[in-house]
Image (cartoon, rainbow, N blue to C red; front, side, top):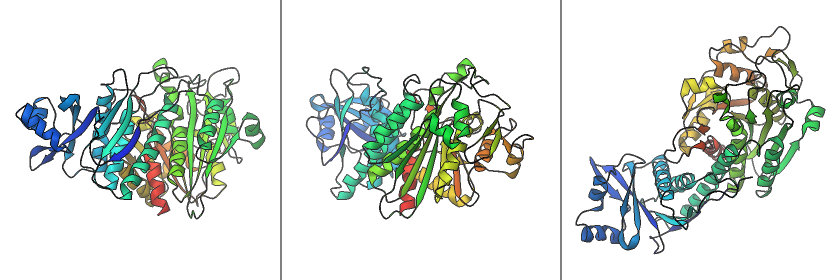
Length: 498
């Protein structure tokens, strides 16, 4: 399995002598672009050596205050400067997160024979802004490196700040923990599906959880059959690599709120007997991004010691066509006894989630959230940078939207109209797994809601668009797996614990 290696991060009062790359900013103030975070000696060097202010030179080389634009400048004694746009001078954590992400991606392009040390000097003082800088730096520095591949990258990141209070160090620790979880989710998503399959993914989750003192329980195919997990068994039945259900538990003393997270973990989705096109199948190693996100989130929550009980379920299966694959029109019995008429074997994610949602509901959590790369319909509706949110009530939706805003992730609330459930009526089972093409994301959510008792708060996050970036990298987002929703879930845990 590929390993995750990230730069070290530290808070420093000034730029160290061994710094290879210095990141400073340009921000808009009173209609002009002004330099931000430039050390006095560097500013003086530009005036003495070039005869002009750094901001002027940077502007001539294409730099601007537009958020996340970058320009490379030479500095004193071989120091290289990256000037990054911050937007308005009254920066938000997300502006800084985007800027530092873009700067670190630019710095990674400067790596030669040895790893680099990068100092980020952007006048970051407020804890949330420091945290945003840390997250942006680590997310921007991330590179997926299969075993034995890749060159040295960024060795260390120094956050330059005048904030000497303990809150600054705590902000760094929270930022590192969250960004590490995001990058772990990215690495799982990016791993080749011949290496990451239900059994190996379950083993990797167990190993990752062990370092965080999390409790892990795994159902193999025999245990799934014994306990009646008909959705997982059907979806995974066409593959020689059998399904798994993984439960990860975090229960700190004094926790008053119980959050349950359920993630779709289709380690490769061919579409089954309703086989996908070749083009549509190419990125389907990413169909386990929901499971990667919920496991990443619970790891970060435990690392931060947030006083909230969290139970995460990863429903893992590989959806392949074969003589043992499930068929359209098969009637499946989901865990707990509900029967489902399979409408389309490429609508498999909702079946494995149904099993896990029923299981998660048994403990009576205060809130259940499922996360899934569930529908192409959601991508059509919201594009590839915005995730869909559907919830039983607006209060729950607002909690999640507030957490997403704090985390810098984009969600849009979609409705759960009553008529969506009517499309799932079946003549031979309790319900059918699919409806018609209209409002496919809403119909899928309506199906999932049937497996969570009405008395429980529940929300569904459809991350099919932003979970995998098939285009060029931007800001702190790489090509490939993005780790979408991890930051939101961690921010939500913080909010619910307070």
